[in-house]
Length: 100
Image 1 (tube, one colour):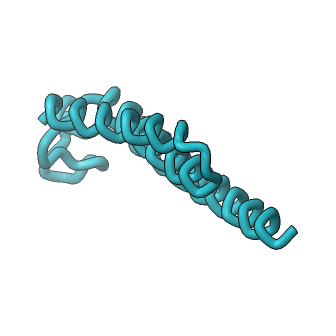
Image 2: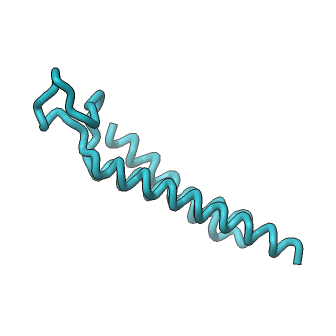
């Protein structure tokens, strides 16, 4: 599982850098989106991947070792929200610059 996540992360960041160097404005935006998604996967994988691990403890599962780490999930959720904000700003900036 970790190898697949590492390969996907490398692929996203590599494709993002390739698009970033394209030179066109839309290529730069797509490149930044791909790099940010790769960064999100790095943060998510840094918390340790556990298959079918609950994020919250229930009455049946009271062992904290079997619980997923909620900190990387919260960081990725915050990064996704910030990424959408930056994407909206960049698309607005691209639209305004194309009209001028």
